[in-house]
Image (tube, rainbow, N blue to C red; front, side, top):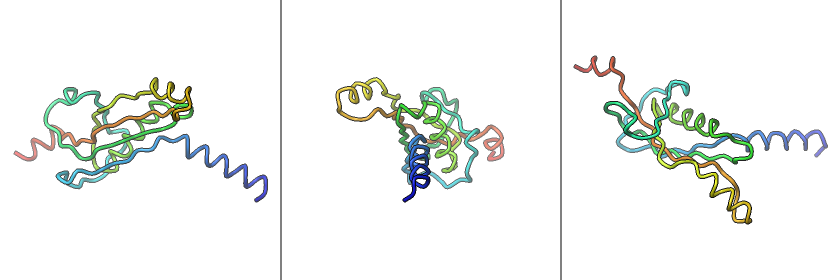
Length: 133
């Protein structure tokens, strides 16, 4: 391998590693829906923040190395994955635990990762509810 291709491979590996990754487990009861643009997916901190009825679509788990991934990038990853599944909302379940991860890395017990768990949801709009009547 030449130096140039080695450098390109290294840069590509860093770019891929910098991205937050989100995994999803679709819930059996959730109907299939058309994808939603990530910018139209709302992040809710608690279920109480969602006003009205909603349907749970999937369980989400996002992570990224804290040194190269911001919390905003983790949230963007959650939005993208939820949107791909036809969800228009995400309810956060487990807050990011960076401090515990920093402690673990300091003492050689692991890496520092931003981790967020959430539920992808579909919130019917007022227009779609009115159309069902």
